Amino acid sequence: MQEVRCGACGKLLAIGDYKRLQIKCPRCRALNDLRAESLQPERPRASSKNGLTDDDRTRNPGDFQQRHRS
Image (cartoon, rainbow, N blue to C red; front, side, top):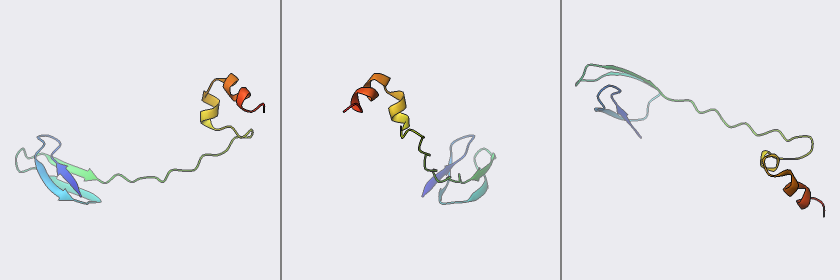
């Protein structure tokens, strides 16, 4: 569960799960309009033509050549 606090004064307004919530703070009378963030699923990375990952490309090129010369 998640705490919902007033954006103006910080007063605790609610605790729970919500999709969309509009609540007026009794202390400062500020209107708080909240929406749950939608999480986008992480897309898998595409492989490159030569099989290098991003980690391999950021390393020193000499290190890569020494590892793969065997």
